[in-house]
Image (cartoon, rainbow, N blue to C red):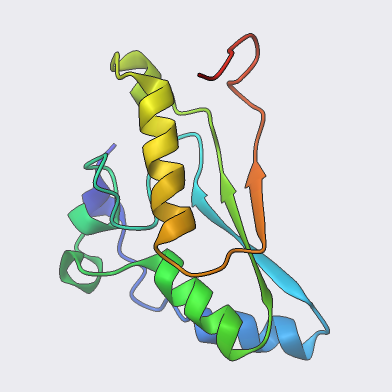
Length: 129
């Protein structure tokens, strides 16, 4: 997997939020990181992120654009983070520290977050420190 494959040149989170609001939604949830490990924000803890993609010259941040758009349209903000990450577990990282560091990034860098959704996949039998 390579971050270079990520280049959503037509991304428009404002359009998403406007459409959701128009449809009567009260909140939206963005997948910040799924099982593949790609971070939709410029995480300091992995190279597999928007910072290492060609999108916006490596300066883009989907989470920032999403949270800003939600606030602009008066929508509550939800962030989804998958604890499962096959590359991190296989790579021998101290996963619990990595997990906390990434969660800290998304919970401290974007203002108030109304909802944090953890997918349970990959956590079976694991006790987090």
